[in-house]
Length: 103
Image 1 (cartoon, rainbow, N blue to C red):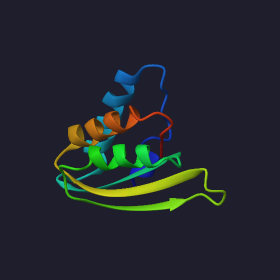
Image 2: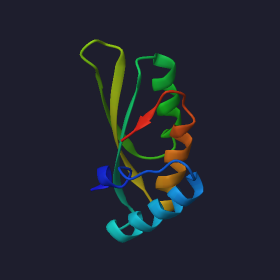
Image 3: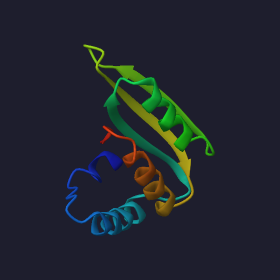
C-alpha cells in the first residue's frame, strides 16, 4: 500500500508533504509493523553503504538489484517500524543521500 503514499508528492513544501504523509501513514497502517521502502540510486557502493547505515539500528531485510545496464541499483527494504514518525524520519535520512529516488 505504501507505494501510493509518495506518488502525489509535491516537493515545493517538504514540511507540508511530511505532515500529509504522516496522516496517510496513520490512516493506512497499524503500527508497529513491517513497512516496505523502495529506492533507486546510482550504482555506487558508498551510497549503498550509507543506506545500510541508516537502517542499521532497526530490524530489516533488504533486497537489491542492478539495472540492466548496471548504472543504477534498486533496493527494497522491509523494516520493522514503531510509528509514522519513524517511517518519516527514515525517509528524511535517506533523502540526504545524493541521487536517491524514493518510490
